[in-house]
Image 1 (cartoon, rainbow, N blue to C red):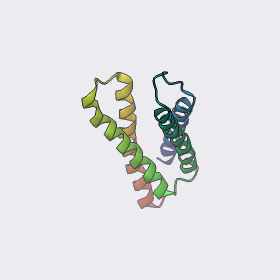
Image 2: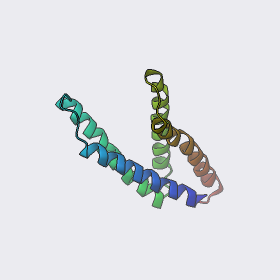
Image 3: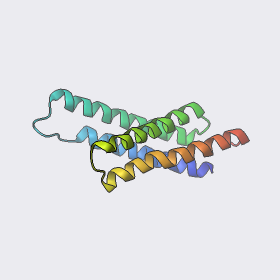
Image 4: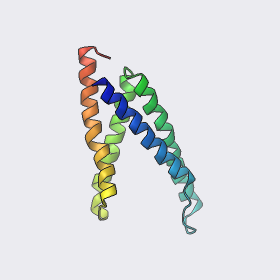
Length: 121
């Protein structure tokens, strides 16, 4: 179980790093205001920095508070994105993104809690 958690955290770390990199290096449309551009790049930098937290917890899984924060943050992000689907038609890419924010995070949180209770961390 611990190996599955570690692999998942590393994968989430690479996804967060990729998301951050793409957001920081993106070119926005000419009509984008400087404030909007700045806001997008700030959020992208947060994603990139979250990758460090994912990598850290992958090698230190006993950091329960940080692990739970990351899982809850991802789950809430997926939940908010799922609720926002009422405003636009979903694409398969968006549905896939929401699914990897909702399903694995709940499973990983359950697995991690189980390992904590058995003293395996």
